[in-house]
Image 1 (tube, rainbow, N blue to C red):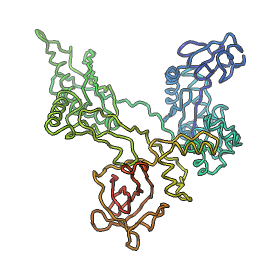
Image 2 (image 1 turned 135 degrees about the horizontal axis):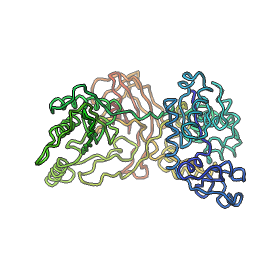
Image 3 (image 1 turned 180 degrees about the horizontal axis):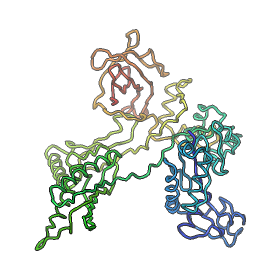
Image 4 (image 1 turned 120 degrees about the horizontal axis):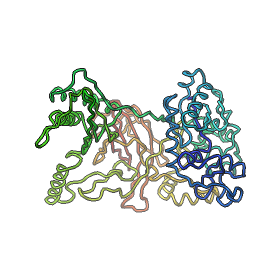
Length: 561
């Protein structure tokens, strides 16, 4: 996808000028960890460069104005620039403070070409924010960022050739680029010429993603920033609303419109602002707060209460009413939250109902024991049944074995398991069960630090199964000849899985399968060891199952939704 990237040179210096008043006309340097992160043009003329230590920079330029780096300041100052870009082009993604990107197709078609679109955006940013900027256009975000530093527009299809001559340091990954430099790869073109599978095997996930960038590809599409929607609803009435019943009916219609608008954006509100204007111009405003999320009925109820209070003006000893009927009514949501289905707890989110439930559960535990009422906790583990732990109600709900989020697979790279080569099960067991030993061996052989391993190697990839059976269900997998399928010590399947029988039911044809994936846990403790292989299978009746084979016996562990 053609990508347009706007880059503001020396943005930390510009942000310091906007927020703190440090004029960029003087020699200014922004420091992070006692090193120069960015400097003004006047400081560069005095010899100040990126990466210099504070003392070295001040020795080259005694009049240097030093400003400490503040990421929050950079982000706040960059927001008006992003808003200015959104005024002339839609779908902006903020890459970092000082750089934002968007798809080039829309602006180029609207303004009559990519060059004209770039000129229009740069001109509008300069007029609106008084900020200098440059634009680069290429077939990927990474290439557009490099092109923006020179203000270039790379021709369609020429991104790979444009990147080929760039130094390997352009990747912005110091550890990886240092290793590539020592291996003799000094340009992005030389790195991009390597086979993707070999790069993944040698340099891991980080190297595979960097390899995609060097080839002129993105590892993900643009996640464009959507302008905040106008969620408020307003209605104007020709006939003033002077009666409570007519005003409440009009308010209920507005409440339903507001709820539908919030639902369309996947949002909900916890506070509701109600505004009204009378026929002679009097303005009324009130904010309602709710302990939870406001639904359509709750919004309508609060609107009716407020209109009743305004129009009746009930106050002890006197009546205070509006000076005339209401001609305009507005509902403004506040306390906006993202929600998934607005599903509260069984007994509500807070308040007396929750306390009653807690007392009831505690009473049941007192009669039947602590284990009679349990609640699930997500935990670390390699199997589906290991990743959910049941703890007694009232105990601390913290995981005993934390696990990092699952990393997404590398798009466009086909991973080949090492088991396809001559690797026996005993060697795999040693490598997976004692990763610290294998890492030390790898370090001694290759002379480089080991790549960081993800936690719980061998665990199930995302998405997780929706149903995990308390006890695995016995099953049998048959091949095309009707014989049970097995797995050899070298992880070779004895036959192609063709049908599956669960709990002595009739066999169901298998439409797809993946595996085997070996798992040999705690082999050094015979009473706790588990050795098995896992498969994922889809059946002709639409089910998707997770199966395991251990000691020659098949079982169904979980069900995918």
